[in-house]
Every structure is written in C-alpha cells, then in structure tokens.
Image 1: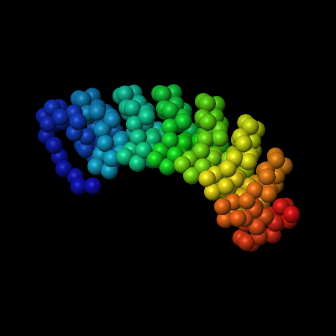
Image 2: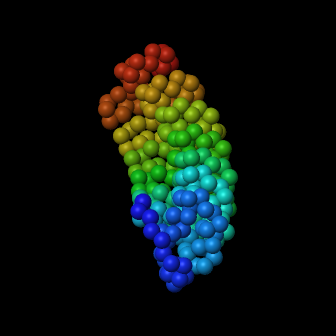
Image 3: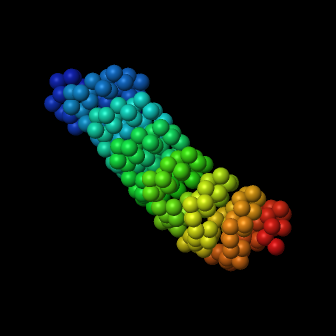
Length: 235
C-alpha cells in the first residue's frame, strides 16, 4: 500500500478520509487509531482494498482492536466488497472471544457471503467446534446451504471434523441433505478418506445408495480414491 501523510487539519475536516487510520493500524499504533476515531474518522470506512478496519481486525484475530472499534460504533455487519462479514472472518480464524463480541454487538449469524457461505458453514469447515456451538445456540440455520448446496455438515465431514459432525447430528441436522450435484455428507467423507466420519454417518442413517451427478455412490467414490477401510464399511 502506498503511504502518505495528511495534515491534521485535513483529517478533522475530512472524516471520510480513512487511509491514515489504516496506516496507523498497520504500524500497530492503537493510540493513533483511537485519536483518529475521536476526531471524527469513521470506523466504517473502506480502505483501497474495499475492506473495513473491523474486518481486518477480525481476520487478524485482534481482540483489542475489535473491542476498540465496536466501542466506537463500528458496523459489525458491514461486509467487504466480496460480501464477507467480520463474523465470517472471525469464524475462519477461530477467535471465540471476537465471535462472542460481534454477536453481542448485533452481528447477523445467518448472513451469507457472495458464495452463499454462512458463518456456520465457515466455522464447520475450519473445525471450530466451540464457535459452531455458539452460532447454533444463537439460532444459526443448522442445515443452511451455500450457493452450491453444501451444508455445515458436508463441510465438516469432508474435512474430518468428527466432533462437529457429531454435534450437528445431535442438533438434528439432516444427515442426507443434498448439494446441487447430489453430494451428501457421506459422499464427501467417503471420497476424502474420513473413515471415522463415514462410520458415524452410517450409524445415524446416512443413505449409502445415494448417487451423485458423477453417477457414483459413496462406495464407488471410496474405491476410486483408494480407501479400502471405507469400502468395507459401505459394502
């Protein structure tokens, strides 16, 4: 990022000019950030990359800056140009305290990005069980679907996050929900070699005869990808 310095008088008169506040944050100068906020620089401005300071703080798991910005009325639901919210960023990195603070400040737990990904899908994919629990307790849609139809359970199953799969099942998530390509949590787990997840899904009623758009069952996907233990489970 090209750096420049504006006279203080311009900062006072042009509260919409947000770049100095980003520069201060990049340098780790939190006192300067607070000073700029106090004289009228908005916490909701975008930088040249079309992201807010709150989004950056969440992406960096910066609890201190997140707190400073929320106390200065940062919009917790203001997304990036790519429609990624601060909460979604926090669910990616796995910072529990930031997730709690954002939700307490009014973050929409069911907001979706441009690809239809909710925070629950993001947290499930990244293996953040405690965050998954927080989101579900705050009424996140448990069988929420992204634009391609994938669900939180499918993402957790594909990555082998068995504790999350188990929790979602406990909360009555649909074990046989279908993505747009007719994939299920079971087919995702089978082709990724997630033996324990496959076993858990089968015990909870997963349909092993479901055929994907590739015209393959979970058995065939496991076989083709070289997972003999899963093949045995699916016979």
